[in-house]
Length: 606
Ligand code: TEU
Ligand code: CA
Image 1 (cartoon, rainbow, N blue to C red):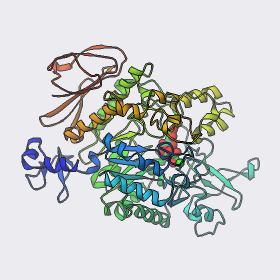
Image 2 (cartoon, rainbow, N blue to C red; image 1 turned 135 degrees about the vertical axis):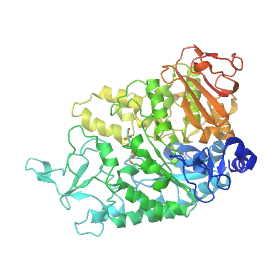
Image 3 (cartoon, helix red, strand yellow; image 1 turned 90 degrees about the vertical axis):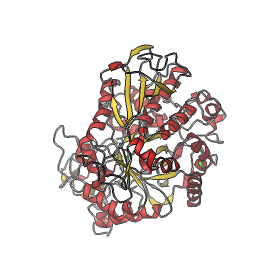
Image 4 (cartoon, rainbow, N blue to C red; image 1 turned 45 degrees about the vertical axis):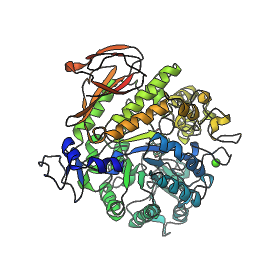
């Protein structure tokens, strides 16, 4: 990557694609043009940064590779698979939480931020893994979970001891509302409900007050109003950055500034939007940037639930000095009606989101491209056709084409490079996820949902689908472990879908990902290029361009499982076919009508 751009920046090349390094003629000042800091290169008006050009691979360590036979993935397992990732072509690894945790929420409940989770190994394992990543010229970002801690973190254990404990104000404690009929004689301070069902307040008998937990009872929210808390966070961030970590994925980071006075939600009020737009959020993120992030060559990506497109520049605008980028969920979670209820994918609606991003976000902003993570079911099962092995593979390749050619830093979730699918869940006890189990204990128990409805919803959209063990080969337990047990069930289709077979098969989803990543790396148009949807109302075909000046690529995706004779709009020709998920194409170069096969994806240089 770096070598390419060093090359690319040779004056001739720069001129050819309209790159302006500060030395050359300054760009005409347009509204969204940025004034590059000293020594920053502009490409198509965007400041160049390694984290904009990166393909990030997310690892959920508990499910990636076990190295000691206990059926739980670990850091030595990751180190063993670094060559696999290097060959795939990814630049950055995002490691979901690896810190000491009682695993109420699989690591997103941290007990000690400077200690490796016992099941995952020891610090020496972490150091060796990081060294292996660097040796292969890749980078590592880790998960910063500081909206809340585990209730077993020593800060909270101190905090709950007494109302005058020096750590009391590290968390959010409030008196209850007197109610003689209520358990303990008090109702919760307000009507906030937790993301994981039930009240967001937990009574604590020792000090007879409630503490706030927007997630699980074992995930008490930190009080960021307390400057000591913020300094604790900045100190642990420096601890990992000084070890050589290259940045952070920041868990629900917009939620750190709570609404003043914590009044009840009004009927119909969007709680997540309220919690994500607190009065001091930007002040805290600017302080974090000033005191930590700006001092390292790092990247920061915020998991921005509750933030809409209009609010994105506030968090990622270069002149805001907060985060490098955020995950908006408007595309990946399109059609969500809350819980496990989703409307079927409507392609024009999805395409409108990408066009809105390209229109609303300016050159001082940066975007992210992703369709899966550890909180979502498998994308090929959600948006692809898995009715036959052929259609599943073509669907997986099509969706990866999309992720790797849309605007923004691209994120792959472990297993999506193989086209891994959802698991065939049949009973509640099979699900590990606290979100499912809490729904069973509350909504099903209260009759709001039947057990069958919960199973059906969680089977289709539940997070456990992303957390079944990585499918490495056809040996027992898919090569994930040499042990007899795995913490989540292995998908029985590992005999058909596994890395070993795909690495050997040049036509596999794995090798197709390699090719798309290499193509993406071959031309800055795929990174810094402008985006245009050429057929926004088409219900089956997604047709868009990425271009910088004369260098333009045409991406065509047939989202239906039917063949389509597709006439390109405005007499556009499909010129030089660079890559397709079908081995060959019968359409001649320059064709204006294309014979698209089911779930076909093509990339043309135009
Ligand atoms: O997720 C926040 C979030 O968006 C999810 O809780 C989401 O609302 C839910 O999963 C929908 O199914 C982050 C982490 O990514 C998640 O794994 C943690 O459980 C959560 O925060 C708490 O740390
Ligand atoms: Ca293990």
